[in-house]
Each structure stands twice: as C-alpha cells, then as structure tokens.
Length: 289
Length: 343
Image 1: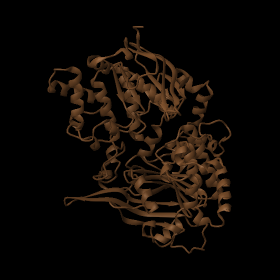
Image 2 (image 1 turned 180 degrees about the vertical axis):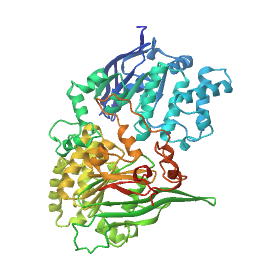
Image 3 (image 1 turned 90 degrees about the vertical axis):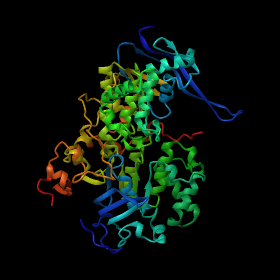
Image 4 (image 1 turned 90 degrees about the horizontal axis):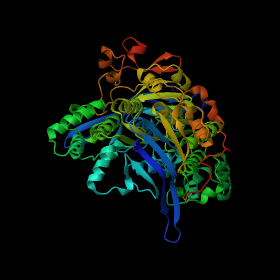
C-alpha cells in the first residue's frame, strides 16, 4: 500500500436532483478504481465527454467533493479521515489543482505575484517574504516566465497562456507530488497550447510530478499521456497504455470517440459529408430532465 | 473579384455573395480625456462566393468575433466601423448592414441572412417553446397558413433528425446537440443566401459535433447557401470549409482553398498553427509558438506577427505586408513569402 501515491478504491458519487417527493438520483461516478504508483511519475489522462463524471472524479481526488461510497487514499492518508487545518495543509502540499479557465482561478483585483507569495508563505511558514520571492521566481522560471515579467501585473494584463503558466507556477510552489489538471488547455489559444502541454511533460521528467490530465481532447491526450482512462456515464469503460488504447480501441465507445476526432487533414474530409446518423450516439433524441 | 453595385435581377450567378473591402472596425473608448482605440479589425478584405463555406480561423483576440459582428451589422459603441465596406448581393449599395434601415433589416434577417451561434440558447427564446421561435422568426418570411408552415417546419426538422415533439419543448429541455440542431433548422428554414456560423459546434461533444457538422454541410449543399464559418478549431475547418482565411491580430494573413492551406501553408503563423496540431498515431514532439498574441490597443509596428516570427527581417518591423496572390487563389501577407517591398 505504501508504494502507491494515489489509491482510488471503488469510488462512487451520486447527486440528488428534484423535489422532496420526486427525488431523482444521478450517479456521476460509478465504482471507479485507479492507482498511481509512488516514485514513478506519469501522466494519466482521464477522457470523457460532458457528463461522463471525469470532473467529479477529479474533484474527489482534490478532496473538493466527498465520495458517496468508496475510499481515496493519497500517499498513505485516507481523505475521508482527514481532519484539521494541519492535515489539510499537508494534503495541499501533496496535491495541487489547475483549472480550465485561468481568468476564473485568479482574483482580478489582486496582483498575480501576491498570489504566488502568499501561497509560498503559507506552505513554508515563517520564512520571510524575500526568501519566498526567490522561490516564486524559481517556480516562474520552471514555467518559462520570471518575476520580472509578471511582477506588479493584474490577471487581465496577461494572456491566457501566460496566466495558465502562472497557475502552474503557483501549483509548483507547494512542491506537490501530484497535479490534477482539469481541461487545462481547452481555453488556451492554439499557438500557445502546445507549449503548456509540453510543460506538463517537463514537470513529469524533471520534477518527478505525476499529473492527472482531465480532458475531452483525444489528440493532446495521445500526445502527452502515458496511460489513459476512458469514462462514459460515470464508469471507466477502457483504460491502459495511451498508445495501445488509442491506436487500437476495444470498447465501442472508445472507438466511437476515436472516429469522431476531426483530423486536421483534408484528405479525410469526405467522411463527414455523409455521416451515419442512424448509429448510436449521445445526441440521439432523448429529452433531458 | 470586384463586384460593382448589382441590379437585383442581374447576373447573380457570377457575382459573389459578400464582398468585404478594407474593413476597419475599432473599439474606441475615452476615459478622463484619454482616448484609446483597439484596432480589432484593421484592413480586412475578402469575398464569399455563392454556395461556398468560407472558413475563418484565428485565436482569441484575433478579431474574428469583431469581424462577424461588423458583417452582421451588430455594431454598438464602443465598436465603430472606421473604414471600408461590406457589400451583400441581396442588399446592394449600402456598404454594410449597419447602414440599412430597420425595415430593411427586418426584411433581410432570417430570410437572406441567418446565424448559428455557439450558444443556441441565445437564439431560441428561453421562456417560449421551440415552436414559438419558429413562428416568430420564420413565419413572417414564409407566409401561407400556419398549418402549412408547421408542416414545413416538421419536414425541415426531419432533415436534422429531430422529432416533431421538440416543437412543444422549451429550449432548456433539449440536450446541447438537439438545441444546436434546432437552431440549425431555424437558421436554414427560409433558405437564406448567407449564414453566419460562429463556433456552432464548439460547445458540443466530439461525437455530436461530427454529426452536426455533417448536417450543416448537407443542408448547405441542398440550399446552396453561402456560409461564413468561424472557429478556432483547425480540425473542424479541414472537414467543412471550402476556402479558409487565417486571421492574426486583426488582419488576414493567408487565404486559400482549405485543402491548399493544409497541404501548403505559406505564412509562418499558418505553418506553425498546422504543424503544432497533435495527431493520434504520431509521436514527434510538437512545439508551440514563442511569445503571445499582441495587445491590439498597442499592436506591433509593421507586420503584427513579426515579434514571434522566425523569418522576421528588418522590413517586417517597418511596413505592413499586403495580401498578395502567391499562386492562383492563394493569398498571403508576408514579406518573406512575397518578397519585395510589399508595395
């Protein structure tokens, strides 16, 4: 058990919807198990469409959501048994999040360097601001920025790509073992996206950080991840080595996803002109609510 | 390429549907006496032919949204049309929808020009059933008895594989894919000559996206409408557009047949945009572009791409490259490609 960084055991999450008498249960995550080995940094992609439960699973790993059943153990600590501020701080030391929209993760009225300094001070306690500033600069250098560039700036003065880098630098200040990134590049411009994606690879190789990469984009998942997990309606339908799974998908849903990827090649264009609209698809007429 | 002001019953086949000439649309603000201008669209010219899907690609803040707002005539301060013209085949002599009278706009909207937006909730009235949206927007243009109209709507909904029962639903009761298909049906029922599609499938899941794209293509082929299709997703462009223009920092940098752009991109920005796309089955490392898109309140001098360009030379910092034909139908604005002084 000690050699696991993250052990997710049969975790489920149900949400209730509707009124008292017409209550309806929605199973967002259904008995999902997964492991990340300690000392073996890797990038694990969790892939699914909207409503597949991938974000709920990520939020449970981040302890932002309590599972309805099942257990999550991070580096020997059971998340359910965690209590008190000290334990929470220790937990945040190990796991850090990166969210989809960097403009929403930063307070627009605060200079970004304050965020970074406060984060550092919080995790290293008494060490003064000048030592913290050194650490902040070092973290920014790891993401290809510097304190000189972002110092004194407000979030809206940076581009989405730069701000997402700052968000990653902020996560690095806690010196985490695991980063959970929920759609970290879907809001980023195409010309900047690959540099963020490449950065995750550098974090894994040079800093030994494991990354859980939550996305709906099969192409970037193929590009950076070591392992992938495909989710559909709360359950994992296929998982394994990223290359094996995406090159030769076995589950019909994975195959359907794989075929729906629009390759940036015109040669494959005729495929779309006569789509098979009779086949099963989540868009088939089905009323919501 | 230049269309003179047309007669309504003239030779319509040959003339393009929309000619945009040297359009400049700026956001002008004035705070405490300090005037600022954001040059979101700065000297854009292009032509949308009849019956084609014309793609427009560009990242956020490249000005593509401002461009389609200008074309659709949705101009509100601080946005201003500073120069240039937009001539539609169905509205000659005005130089743009923003100059047309209200009654003229009512005649045109939905009948000649319609929209498919990213969030179709913005098109379908959220507090009324889908049927009401059809009656409100399309019925005045089609006329006849309401019963006939409803039959037409049901038949049209079948084209996008929607059951007639969606007519009695409220927009929020439909899934994202169904809503987008309902919006597509609404936008095409009057068989308009021109459709503006702004990121119509971006919010959809990949499987649904492919299906909706196929429907847009199918209906467009059937009605012969022209579509201005805007998205940042190059994969979508590769699959649906006939011609493609790439926009960077308020200007067009390249335009050609879509296949040509993907096979033979000439502008350094387009080259990187295409080569950096990851593909399943290919393991070669991909590099993003260094730097960031410029702030349009204070754009770089000369070619706006020069601070990030690997081929930049001295002239690029000084002068603005113009769009020139590099080969037949393939226009590019780059000194390194076109050579010369760009005059």
